[in-house]
Image (cartoon, rainbow, N blue to C red; front, side, top):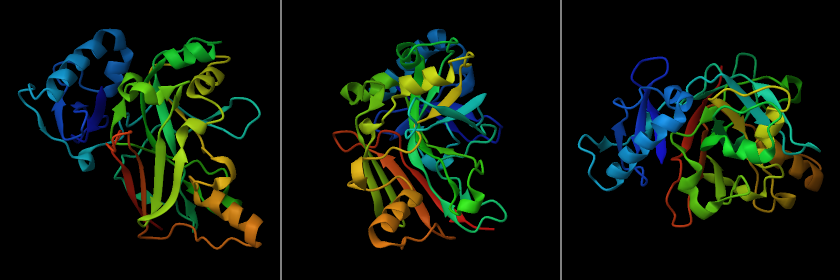
Length: 297
C-alpha cells in the first residue's frame, strides 16, 4: 500500500492512504491519525490501512479526494532516529543524522547561513519497525515497513564538509510488497532519475547498492535496538564508472576532475530546481517526485 502525511497545520500532520496511481487519497483518521501511530502498532493497524487502500483502488472509498503532493509533509515529519548508509565503506555502515525536522518533497532546499555552495544527494530510504539488537540482515529486511525517496543535501565546499543538513523525503511511502518483483535482496530494482533544472544528472540503477537495506538496518542495530519509526537512508548509490550519471554534483565534479583536470559543473544556485523520481516498469511514478527549489542565504 501507499501512505502519505498531509499538512494539516499540526507538527506531525495527518496520515493519508494514497491510491496506487497517486490520483486519489483518503484520510486514515478512523484508523490512525499519524504515521508514527501506525508504525507503533503496525501488526494491528496495517491490515486496516490495507483494506482502505484496496477500497480506494477499486473506487469504493466514499470520501476519496484528489491527491496533491504539494500538500504533503515528509511521510514521517520527525523521527526517533535517522541514519545514513555509507555505500563506499568496506562493511555496512550507517551514521547518525539529524531527524527532528524532515522536509517534505516540495519544501524549499535552503542553504544554511554561511554556505555558498550547495549539493544534492539523491537516494532511497526505509522506515523500520522495532529492530532487536544484534539483528541479522534478514531480520533487518523483515523490519522494513516502508520505502520512500530521499534527498540528502549538503554543502558543496570541502571546508563545510560534515555539516548535517535536514533531509527531504518523497511525498509517498510504500510497503515493500507494493514493489512486487522490483523488491529483491532488500534492494529496489528500479531506476532512480535525478535532474537539475530539467537536465538529467543521473539514471541510476538502485539495485546496484553495494550494501542492501537489510545490511544497513542490521549494522545500525548491531549494539542497540532500533525503535519503530527509525529512518535508514541508502547513502550515495553509484553505478560503475558513472556511466548512467550521478546522484550528486560532487560525484560528477570528481569525475570531471579525474577526466579533464578540473570540474566544470557548478554547485546548486538560488532558483535551481532539483527533481528526484522513480518509476516502475510500466512508467508509473512509485513515490511521487521530490521537487525542490534552491534558496540561498
